[in-house]
Every structure is written in structure tokens, then in C-alpha cells.
Length: 165
Image 1 (tube, rainbow, N blue to C red):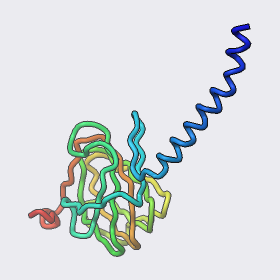
Image 2 (cartoon, rainbow, N blue to C red; image 1 turned 60 degrees about the horizontal axis):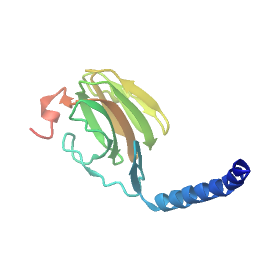
Image 3 (cartoon, rainbow, N blue to C red; image 1 turned 120 degrees about the vertical axis):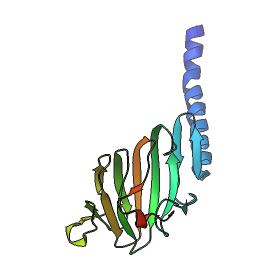
């Protein structure tokens, strides 16, 4: 008899539980950036872009996960205005890059060569192995998402391209 009474409460308990989760999800959907437990989400509408001090003026950055200057995984996004030129450079770590917005042209080598560049549209993906010299140009406004395993760096092939010199 007790078992039947307990089983009769199961549907009510499930409805209450799902109702609370629904209300919680609705409340959290109003939150623009949420961290709960081990889950991290970010809403592009509220991300605060900052100047990227390692690149020529115009590129903006936001770190989404981790710290690129420390050991461990990281993910960040960069935003470039239309016409932005990124001179040849290298990174000590492997980078995984996805084009989220715009038309992005990439090339590899120590000399900037517009004729050898490849066009990357939204959804395009590429991997740059460690210490591979590469360069880029933003045909339109571009947003990229880059991931790697830090620490990372930015070394210019031509020292005169370093905006901090």
C-alpha cells in the first residue's frame, strides 16, 4: 500500500521538477554570460571586446575560456575591421581557427603574398601548426574563434611589424 502511495507521487514530483527546471532555464536565458558548475556559455551581445595589444591597431579580442598566457587550454575571439592586414607572424602553440563572421584571407610563409592567399568564408576552419609563419587580411569585418593549449605567444617575422617596438 505504501508503495502504491509513493508511486502515485512520482508524476507530481516529476512535474514539479521539470517545472522548476523550465523556470530556472528561462531565468538563466535572461543572463547574458552564465557560469554554472563546469558549464560556461557566453552571449556575443554582452561580450566586452578589448584592444589586442599584441597586434596592429584595430584588432579587438575577448578571452572566452582559460588564459592564453598560462599553461592549459584557451579559447578567444578576435574581431578585425574590413581591410585589416595582419603581417607574417608565428605562435609557439598549435592554433585551431574557425571563421564566425566575414570573409578572411589567409596565407603562409615569411613574406606577405596576396596572390597566394586562400579565402575563408563563415564556417571555414583551419589549423596552424606550431611555429608556422602565416599572415591574413580581412576583406570584410571578420570575427574568428581561436583555440589552443597555452602558453601562447605572437612573434613577428619582421620585427618592424611589432606594434610594441
